[in-house]
Length: 171
Image (cartoon, rainbow, N blue to C red; front, side):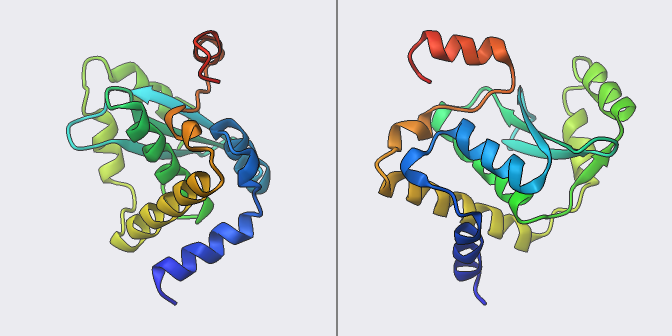
């Protein structure tokens, strides 16, 4: 089965109502289906790296890092791309809380630490193609259901950021 058809079937399996799409609702839907929390972390990513996904090895939790320095529309696409990896059950690095804390602590002094960690994560071309295709199909559904404005609003795991977006009228 070709990637486009395979990812269209995967999208249909989600059984999500795109008439009511927001990033927060979509993420909550994926969390419920996967039985895992998904946390989004804005980050100054290394050059030519826009997003990354790391699983918690101890708790049912996923961490999606996305480049905070790119335009909001690109941030949303990056979040959808990383979510597509999660939806597809692609392999990724699994880190303990101690390992994750160490990486975050070292990040200020070693900005490329996240890239170094992820270079040791599985990164197959087929998985990237599937994630990119599924992200594009999700975006097409959002546009088809006239929810385009929601593709400019990133999801945030931080309450202060959510409150900030709400105050600005973006959520």
